[in-house]
Length: 204
Length: 274
Image (cartoon, rainbow over all chains, first blue to last red; front, side, top):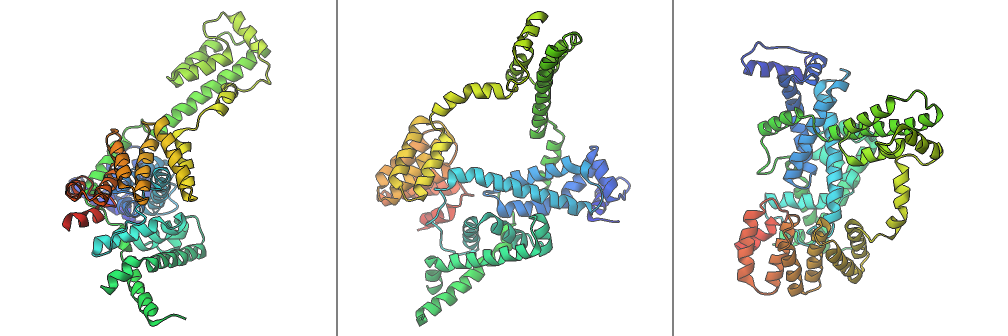
């Protein structure tokens, strides 16, 4: 089986000037688990973008996103010994890292919510006059959704996972994921409708 | 029934909702100032080569726990079969000392095996005095502390949670009192920092910007490193409400430079540009 990860190892070896090495996922994971730096780098790069996307979309601040992504990637490296080769390595690692990211972000949000619950700029939402403000506006509204709806919407629409993948990552059934998406989007629309800023802005 | 104006408004807000929801993919895009991919990979690989991370510490504690448990088990065995343990008591101490550098663990082991340095017969007597049904090593000190714990004053975290619950239920005056106790009793904690900023916000919302400014200033002068953006943002709002516009403008300029990632920056930038 030629996976994304093993082909990455190939290109890495080529870029280092050494002979290309084609490894199966299991052999690659074993090498990485034993501390082979090139193999570890291949594993990290194979899941880097997905993990960072999830962290960026869910974390409170860019710094928290970097910390969460870094920790999740370390968790993948620590867990390599438990990889049995049942699924492609990049898919296994992405699942593990993203679950870990979700846990970390949730934990960090809980910790911060103790401090920030009153400080959230509830009535200070800026008018969405440009793209940055629209994005900020979406973040503000997402923060106020229930945890599961927010996570589901982000995995589906920000990161682009399929319903089945979101279900697997959030340990829910596909129909539950569908329900969370429906409810989450409805809640977001409702909140936006309620916001007089928007209506005024569109009129002007 | 809805009037034409309402229909128009709904249609417009539906457009707005679509526009806002279309921003979803951009949520996943890195913000300015975040680590580049190569830097992130390098950092992860470097960190993975240092085993002294949280898991290492957890393992240390687990091993230390094993040492304590082993010591506790041996104390019972000494009472039952005092003939064979000659070498093991010292070995238990060595193991306990090796598995953790924390004095408390060693002390717990001492509780289980008799006072360290005592001659063997005294340790044996100590083991005989403690019946097997006594509380375990971990339970004993907890039970001894229980009465004082009941009487202890609320922690900073408890006070903050209480104040926030009061605020959420609309009991603003109670919340203010609780926040003030928190600031007085736990002045140097992160929770007190949050309380000072919250007091400022409450005063602003109550139309008392002078008082609010006092709270924000007291937070900014406290050398706390948390909630600086929130406190500065509150300070700017208070200055604007007091009509001290030049000062507010200077502060806003500084804010945009110092806190470019803050959720408040878009709002503050508007003030700067006006």
